Length: 384
Ligand code: PEP
Ligand code: MN
Image 1 (cartoon, rainbow, N blue to C red):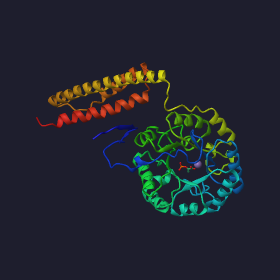
Image 2: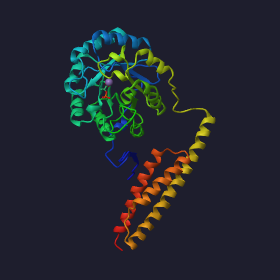
Image 3: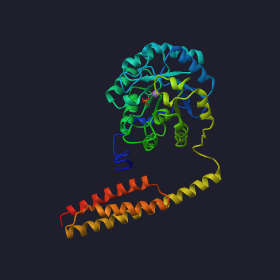
Image 4: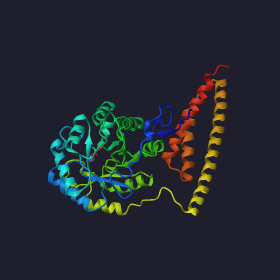
């Protein structure tokens, strides 16, 4: 059994543990949907459809930029508190269709139940997305999948609000089993406790794990809901593309400060374009021989260092076993707080001297400590 463990704050979740094979392996990339001349996919539009005029005017302005491929607009808004604006509801769907007619771009909205799906299909929307609060609930996801059965409309699935890769994969699988072939995932960050500059922490390791497992699945990033504020959007959007994601969903509003939802994170179309202009889209591969050689040489140096690290970890663990036996003979407890404090202090200091971040070294030490306690416990409990 192959365990690859990804540390996730205090938790550790197994990404590649033994489990049922996933049908998502057969999924094809979106590639030519919507029609676009290659390059990253850009979905934009306001957080919420607020009025017919607002939506059509936004759509026209976004289409005029020539950079947007697909228009978004929330019709039913999942809001944390009941008094907040909950969307205009089904009456906004014909406005989206009028916007499409006015600007020629396909339109999409969020669906959270079967009734939403039926209304979208009835009005002829081009695509739908499943929001983060819905992805967490397999009952709702299955209800949506059943309502979509037999209708091969493109479906975008946002990650669940909690950092659970399996739940995200499960929602994608439910869509695929309902016959959806144009399927994509949206990374919108994860809710968290404690301080963060982000509204939803990106936890890049989770979309990376999804990407590693399903390289063909189209994966885009939603910097708007990750950041929750305008000034961070550019950096997050750039990072997503540096990680080889396929595009972005970014909220845009004609008058962001007056938006009825998510005012702090929306940007006007001109700012969106300026952002796109300064984005550096790098190639995933290069044909340049010199570059390939240099890359190979750097990778083999990394391979060698990794090998050394693993051997050293093995060596360290064998000493830990010896320590366990020694403590057992002397009837001494495994965990000694002073020693642990000393390890934390000295290693953190050393790590900082060689340019490693404190956050990184603490995560490493935490894992190492857990494993070493596990090893010593095993030694202590072994019958002689
Ligand atoms: C949205 O896209 O406006 C939205 C509500 O997103 P999320 O489901 O990511 O919170
Ligand atoms: Mn929003």
